[in-house]
Length: 377
Image (cartoon, rainbow, N blue to C red; front, side, top):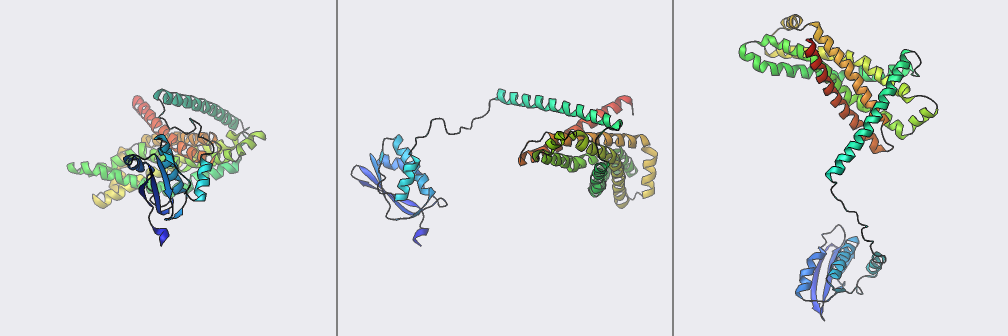
């Protein structure tokens, strides 16, 4: 029971000094008093020395040592002598060890805010390095595609089929769920305004045009960026950590042809197909909402889309999906090959791949939309 007594102290004046009574259990997990709070009491007694009484000290560990070191440093700054003779033998040995070598000035780490110009410089240097690496990667990728056209690329067909299966059929469930919900949301959003004018029939126009031209390709690309793009970065990053990439280079095999090309072709093939499926599921989701809440039959819904959403909008969406597939696979593989040699670098590469893919998707979609507007498509 004595060991459960809370750590506390008591000061008594003795012969031009103070006697500090240490009472209770002074362990690191306990509530240790702050040594700096003793200074006002010491000054109030005008004492020039401090000694210790440990008769009521039951247990102690590093918590007591931290308190003693802070107290000794505080007293030395105020020219107050500290008598350590009555401390436990173990504490005295640890104090002698702690003060055996004086602390070198400037040894403590100082956390300072980085100047603004230094931050700008570091960001600029990193962007320049990344830009150079990206240009080298794109040039190597173009050379690999050229070798593939000539039939000289060192790429296994089995790897391509495996990547197609991983990127295509395995993603159908998540594409089904997301696309159907997006189609239902578009129908709900459009119906809020259209029903004010009794024009619920035009829900089909909104959902069909939105899914065919924009949402089908974008939602599929976002899903694949979070699913396949991050996976590519993690796979290639882990191979970089395990020095498998270096082994391929040593054997004279291009990592771009052997690893990147199958993933690039897999997304180029599967993204348009997934986009078509996404468009269909989005339109189906809108049809469910229209038929269930607004008394618009499935036939009317289908006929409205057929009459007012021409085929060119579907073609534009499929072309966008193919371009997004190139961007997602390129970003994921680039970040994977750029990965460092640690486990944390693999996680950073996967995160960076997703962020880069999303930025490229939005920028590319904006550019394609502007081009289509200029061309009047």
